[in-house]
Structure formats: C-alpha cells, structure tokens
Length: 364
Image 1 (cartoon, rainbow, N blue to C red):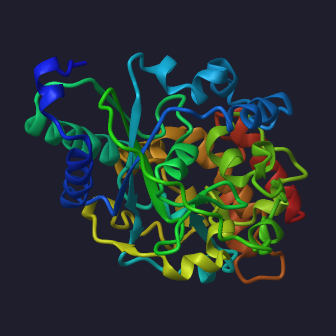
Image 2 (image 1 turned 180 degrees about the vertical axis):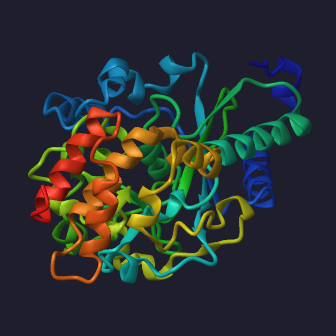
C-alpha cells in the first residue's frame, strides 16, 4: 500500500480531483463512478439483524467478519472515502433469457457468468483505475475490491450516488437497470462525496412476486438459504429436496428478479470482449452439459465464474435441472438417459441428486 505525501496532498484540489476521477473511470470503461464516505452506521443494524436471522446460510465468512463489513476504516485503516464504480455485463450477443428459462431441456446460466470471471476483469480494471489516479497525484493509500472481501458494495454504491437499493436487494439505476458489476477503491483521499439517489421502486413488488423460491421474504430482505443463486453457487452440500422442483432449469444463478424489474428495460448491453458468451452457455441443453467429463469442465470453464464451484456441484445442479424436465415433454427420455449414465458417479453428492432426479421421472 502506498502513501500520499503531505506535499502532494496540499497541492490537490479535492473537487477538481473528484471530477477527474470520474472522467478517468469513464475512460477506462466504467459506466458510472461515484464517491462515498465511510459512515455505514445506518446499514450496520440491518446487517446484524440479517445475520442473527441466519439468512446467510452456510456462508460463514459473512458472520466471521461481522460488523467489519459496515466499517471500511476498520477493514482498511486510514480509509476516509470509497470510490465506487459500475460496469455493465450483459453480453451483446446472447439468447434472450425468458425463452431459455421456459425451455425445460435448456440450462439457464445467470447472464453475468456467460463469459470470463468478473472478479478477474473488475479487479484488473480497478487496479488500472487506482494507478491512473496515482500517476496524476503521486503516491497515496488505496486498496481495490470487487465482491472479494467484507464490503457492503450495494450500500456503498448507493451512498456514492450510483443508484438505489431495489426490493430484491440489488442496486438499481434509472438509466441502466441492474445488470452490472460493482467495484470499490478504498482510499485516504479526502474527496467530496456524492449525494445518494432516492428510491424509485414505489409500490412495485414484481421481484418479490416472481421469485421461484420466495427467497425475498420482505422488501429489501433476502433469505439466502432459499435463493437459487445461493443454492447453486455458494451452497456446498445437498440442495433441500423441497426446493429442487422450484429451481427448474437454473443451473448457475437466477436472474428472475432482475428480468421482471421494469427498470431493466433500460439495461445496457456490454461490448466487453471478456463478457462475451463462451461455450454456447446462453442456450445449451442440460443433457449436453451433463455429458462433460471433469477434464471437459476444467478445459472449457477455466477462467469463468462457474469454474469456481467445481465439477461436483456443477453436476449436482445439472442433475436437479434434468430431474425437472417435465415427464410429458419430448426431452424426458433424453433426461433419463443422461441421468442413468451417471447413476454410479463417484461423488455421493452427485449420486444423491441423480437418484432424486430419476425418481422424479419414475425411473428410480
């Protein structure tokens, strides 16, 4: 970590620097940049209530870090401001989501995961951003984050004026909906902060009503233990049987609450090559993915967000999707054949979900 010298600090006009930072961010490809202070005291009680309710499931790291998530200056001593940035991720050439979700033989992958792992893309871009500032003003203290540490990204972005928290708990903007990534630069630069945006959800509850597993238990409150994104990505063990039929064909993440949101009619496509669709994952058949060997999985998905869950959980998710293919559809026989081919899989976790899926087809 570098240190801003007193000489350079005295020479910097904070307002002019803030304006330059926003411009540099746009030059680097971020769609919006804002600046927040580090006072998240209003959000801390809600975080603690959420943890006490057990809504974090088995994401132990959420409880481990506790209030540090709401106290940026404790996470990175010396931090007085956070520069927040957003980057659109919807691939410019990807199959429309709803037809894929409604095709029981297809595998639906959350649109953020169709290309390269966003952690790598955002971290590199944020590092370049921080270094661009350093080139202009000299050494200063900073640290970059993107969904990689105990950071309240949505709350920081809200305070930085990038949008408001939707009832599905994601950040929303009037000009771009919610299909974007967030990243932060924690810094000791005493920059002027941006004004927070007002809430524009009104009386709309479409995101709550459409959630397949009713994981949004109240406006702005998500029970991760029921969330399909949590179950297919963060959860390591067996997916609760009562939730499996509700997952449908969503094998990595779930976008329903975003897709139904009226503000996402303004969602913008990304021209980032790293976010372009790989391996045809925008509309590929469940049965086809289930035939991939472990070597295929690593070769094709290395460098993607999906690779992080590992081959075993990938097969677990696909087995659930195959079990949800309707018996009356033409794909039921293909689903059963694919499942039977893995009935003796070496993984107990995979075998359990395959057995459940076969039972759904009356083929146990």
